[in-house]
Image (cartoon, rainbow, N blue to C red; front, side):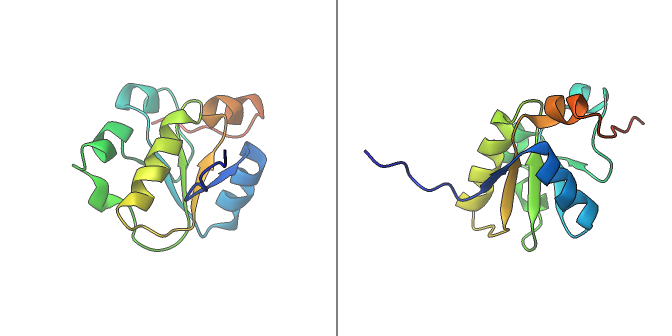
Length: 113
């Protein structure tokens, strides 16, 4: 049995930070507002995975350029990346494995409003 090829690349937090530090990537946080309020990665835009699933905000996902999705642990962001690809967003698309939980463990910066 073969595994289907995912339309996005899984990256760890170190690779994600390198992508973000490179400055040429769209960063989308797919968590809920209450999670965002507890801290987010600077430069991110909040579009919850539920808004992507319902297609109510899918048009706010950039149509071009690399996009990095993240959530708390990496599951919802993988779904968001999959859905983005399914509506024709080519990216390249990335999913940050381990999410902001791993980001924090790596002692990378988190912003608060």
